[in-house]
Length: 91
Image 1 (cartoon, helix red, strand yellow):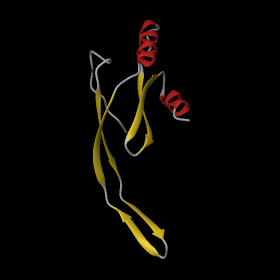
Image 2: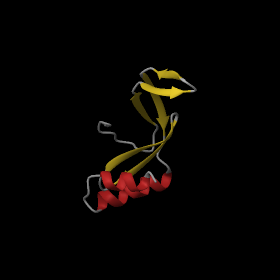
Image 3: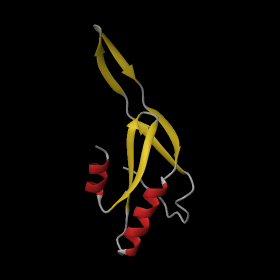
């Protein structure tokens, strides 16, 4: 779950705080444990994503902010009409 407070200037960087939960897995006959970890990434919306935001606002649609994890330390940011939009963009 991600919560974003009101932001006036989306062209500026956004800080994203997240937590990875602990993982247990079998690795070559032994148990591998990765503990809980918290992290923060600073990301920017690409210019074309800001155009999407503008269009949604013109249509009087409250945008959903999509935080799409591409790797453990890389995210893409986008706007959508719904969480289903975010799911489509993550593929």
